[in-house]
Length: 338
Figure 1: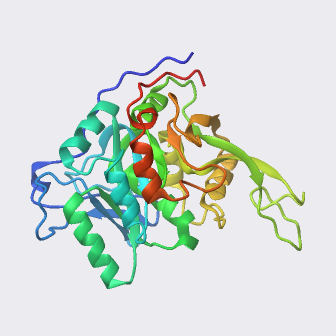
Figure 2 (figure 1 turned 180 degrees about the vertical axis):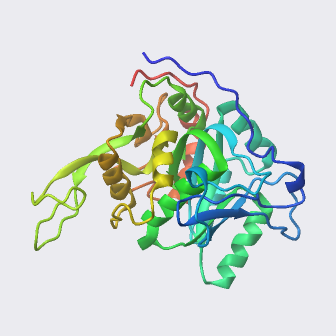
């Protein structure tokens, strides 16, 4: 059975003293030709003296530096074992409330204890909208909870692949992490078990970790083109992770960061898009069924209503119900051989 790595968690809120008066981190640019700059902002009424939220702004003028990274001089990439970006949207305030009442702590002290005990950092990830009312509501939520990573990209379902790529690039800019985890806001997660999974010793550095499936690839109904590979094979299948949760190792994300935005093709589905890219990059696929369990067990890591829904079917209610079950929230962790 694989051995586990030892690690020393470092809470990502240990930023420089210069940033204590601000509610957002100062960042640096990521990408070649299209960079990301992370700017500090002073939000009136921010009650957290040591802020952890970050606002990521696209900098069209940045040509990139070494490895596409440019720093303002005092910004550091915080060392963690895993960064978990919980993908959310403007219609999902209820989901975030349920999450903060269950496995995602709502106050900084408990969140810090979770991050220190697991070596993982957790942030809600959301884009922007032209609706000023919704943006004002989001600002108030950021001020109250300070647990967001804000992306300068339109928050639209049709643009999820672009948001996902932006997330990985922003996360890489902020955190020096062994793994970068994409998770949806409608799954029940056991962070302690996710930590154990990510901490396993691996002999390969380019890892695509998830609950894998072989699904039909979207094809052109006229030409029967196999989109990810470009083969005229009609109906084809390829292995990729279910979308609610998967992880990419640091080496894989570093390769994504170095890509120009138009280097790889975007598909309508985010999980298919990432899966096709992983196929093209010839990374190691690591399948773990504990990331897609329909009910809580002593080894389940992520629970959601597979295959009925891509997540929990009624997440706001179901999340709270699961958390009341001892088998979900309080059962000891059993190490799986998988």
